[in-house]
Amino acid sequence: MNKSYRQGQILNLIRGRAIRTQDELARALKALGIGAAQVTLSRDIRELGLVKTADGYRQMRHESAGPDFASVVANFLMDVRVARNLVILKTSPANANTLAAALDRHAWPEVIGTIAGDDTVLAVSPDDAAAGRLRERLLRLLAPG
Image 1 (tube, rainbow, N blue to C red):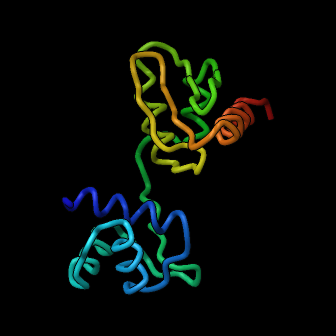
Image 2: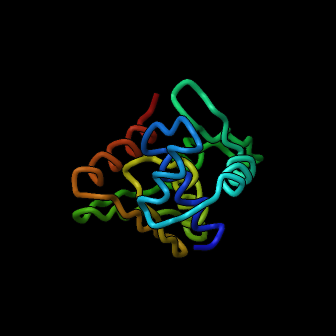
Image 3: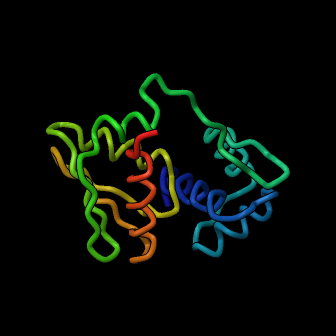
């Protein structure tokens, strides 16, 4: 496994459940077929900007120079359609990538991943119910006031 993949799995693990120690993290990674020495985990934790909280490891939020998620949705999202566990998001031309990147960074549990074209984002949800919840969350961001 390469470093990027391992670090991505670490982020998935800490977002999905409480991981309180490096030993717990090592066991969870091993269950995924990823071996990592303690020194490697320490370096990954530092590079990912993880902090230990009462609820386990969490990634510190990095301030971005760009607009917040709600602003991206309000400015670019034009339509939301659901097809089973797939959510199709229509944007104005040339803005799909901005919306997809913001949605990926937001790390909602209703989104496994996104693919962006010019004016369309395909967001994949784990199941049909999650796709419906994603649609409702996005529509609430568009609702006035």
